[in-house]
Length: 138
Length: 98
Image (cartoon, rainbow over all chains, first blue to last red):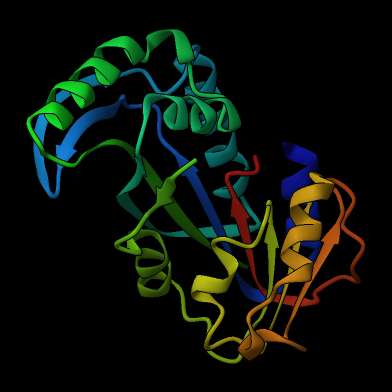
C-alpha cells in the first residue's frame, strides 16, 4: 500500500491531484425492490474484517496527508448494483469479495418468487456506501 | 446473468463534481474493464488505465468507445511499479486499489 502511494506520488505532477475511491466499512443494504420501491431490506456487513480495513484506511490517511499532499475533500455516495436473481448477486459478491455468508440468499430468492407470483417484476439491489477523497500534491 | 451497476451514474457524477478533468493526463490505477474510466473520460486529454487483472484490462483495451480511441490506453501493470516517467500525470485516480 505504501509502495503504491509512493509510486502515485512519483508520477504525479506538482500540484497534481490524487483521487482515492473506495468502499467504506459501514454495512451495505441488500434489498428487494419493485421499480424504486423497497419491499424488504437487510443490513449486511461489507467486510468480514472491518477493523482491518479501518486500520488500513487510517494508514492511507496518515501517508497521504503528511508532507507530500494536502487533503482537499471527501465525498460519500451510494453505489447501487441491481441483480435479477440471487445467483446474480452471488456472482457479484464473489467478484467483489463481499462476505457471502452474511447475505440472506434464500430469503431474497423466496421474496423474489413471491413477488413474481403476484405478477410484479422485482429485483435485488445491493447499496454499498463508497467514499472518494482528493489530495493535492505539494 | 443480469447485473446492472450504478444505473443512475452516481459514481462518475461524484468524481466529475470533485475533480476537474479538463485537458488532464490521467492515470487510473485499478481500472479493471474500464467501466468507470469511460464514464468520466469525456473532458480529459488522455487516460491510461492499469490493472493487474489481465483478462479485465484486455477487455477494456479491446472496446474503447469511438470517442476515446487514441486518448485511452490500458495496460497490465502493478501499482507498486508504475511503468511511467516521473511527473507524467495531472491526476492519479486510485480505484479501490489500496
